[in-house]
Image 1: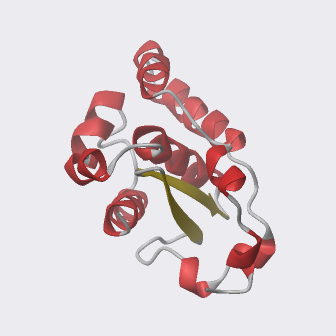
Image 2: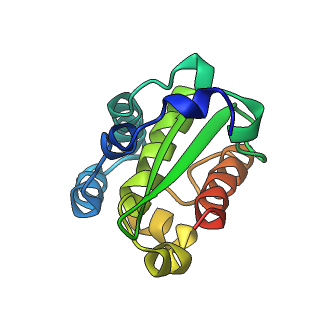
Image 3: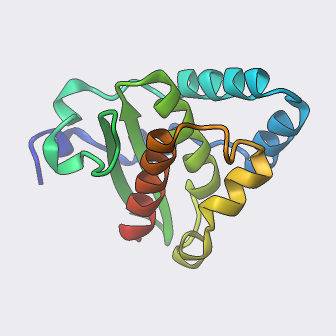
Length: 146
């Protein structure tokens, strides 16, 4: 356990809970890519900034072009995450992933299909190849810890 992890409590992991249905509705109502991109950026602002002491190599998500960090805590059979990135758009994409996975059980997260989810949100094919690779690296990191 890194020094930064000692400061994490259950409350940190319970701070971000997004309703997946609300996320889907917001993205369905955004008819153009620019509107969807704006929703992604707004979602990024909804994630709390991670303390710098937590931005350690052990928590860094491999495969992301931007720096991104992920922590996991199981609570009562459900899985909770905190995450951050140095890039605003990545932080918004993290919020989308957490919206689908936060507070879910292991079976739900194992069955989570990020490609289908991003297609449903209307953002598949809209991101650069490096951004898409990073997004899948984050999704795989979430799935790997459960």
